[in-house]
Length: 257
Length: 89
Image 1 (cartoon, rainbow over the protein chains, first blue to last red):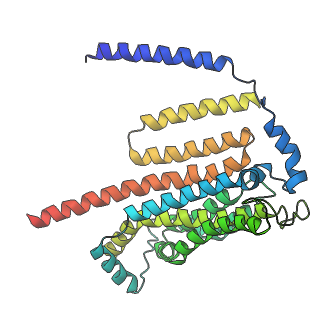
Image 2: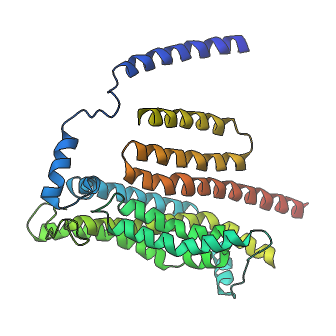
Image 3: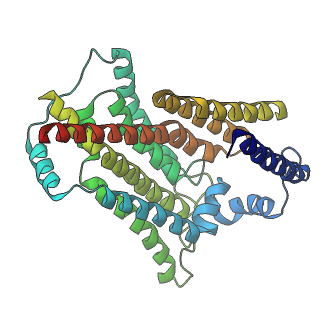
């Protein structure tokens, strides 16, 4: 295929795409215009029905809670898949255990990174964990919720890695309890659904007392589910980073010797 | 608001083009992180603060870090293979 023919084929495709795009864009709603009744209906009903001031989370964790349960298990199985694919081979596993038994060494290289960056990233660690917990537990009140909070918590150990505190980073992300928390968060979500079954209502119905609107402990299961999702997502992201980093971390240790 | 929104959308389009045209992978990852931040700002302006929150952490930190780790891992594998070949010779 000569460049000329290639250009011709591209031009035909580009003109076709442009025409279809323009035809589609002609009927677009105006700026900030909302079509369809459902958003308005839910926005006016969620505070009254569920005592939740964040309508988005009232939808994701209550009105369509079953869908979110499915999404949660998509993440769960994706992380399980990554862990299966990147699992250490038999010899590697033995070597890794030996490595873990040895005294942890410090890998801080002060010359490579400015002290300001190190101090600030380390100081940010506590802040981001606290902020993540706040976002996850206040899902029913303010924008955010479990997924966002979980990701923020998972970003905290990454800050340590940026600050070249590799040792602390590895101790946190390789801890066996992370795996436990991943399964724990996911299964607790499903268990909350069973509370409704015990009370004689359909799966995942919000049967817990709704409480005072605006309170942390309000809106029944929404806050609980948000917190569970936060635990699961934080653990899942930490696990994935560790799986990717394991090989590199052991190489850094080799170089140090 | 409309000018701000459309300006931001245009900026996102430009930065996406710049990412594709960047040759060096490390520079590309930094540009990707900037692109993620712009996206978060866009979600905020279009009244989706909860999506903006997750976009900040995923788009500006997690995704660039993952790409960076994957590339480091690949380079590490290449080095290992090279060493093995040198030893067998």
